[in-house]
Image (cartoon, rainbow over all chains, first blue to last red; front, side, top):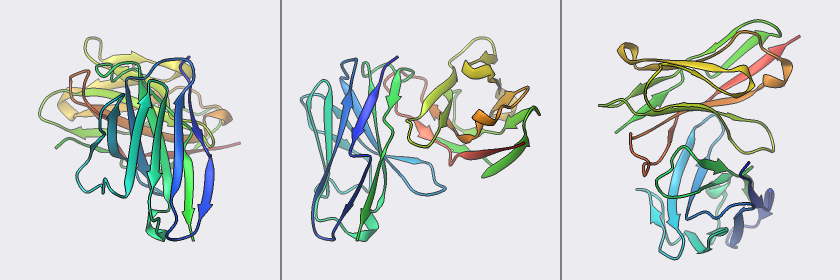
Length: 117
Length: 114
């Protein structure tokens, strides 16, 4: 089946620094990737949608200058949390689709736990 | 805007007993409906989905779900729970378009007692 990986699986960084999270589709090409944020006991909140080669579309309330998303290839998307603060601590999950129009073929990475101290 | 409600934050079921996890949605039309399972260290895995047709949907790992339009519900069931089913379960909806994005419920944590 389709596999999506994330790296790192967990990261601790100091307040004010930036951290990059990678999301890779290992055995398929993903024209569309998604980034979610999950708080404890909460649902997954969609942060942004990215299509390969174009700018990401951010959901309302998500700061695009703080959460930089790059989808440079069909197998790699990155999320960079810039000038991280403790309130950015969360579980970040990426997801990839085989094509934009196949909502039922969306595969999820294992997530990255970010802790900002 | 569409929304998904999973009224049970956590449920404990004895191994071998039956299971039903509830999901209600709010949307003007019948959306696409999904159930995912999230285990520690693993990504969300699709258990089953409903797009149209037969309202009783069979999924992987022995799970099934029934779409009830009159109740705006899509409850997940399993006749006999195994200890390995302990995980968090998410109901999700999407507009009835392949281009749409998923909206998730808050999840239900399933605990399985011996």
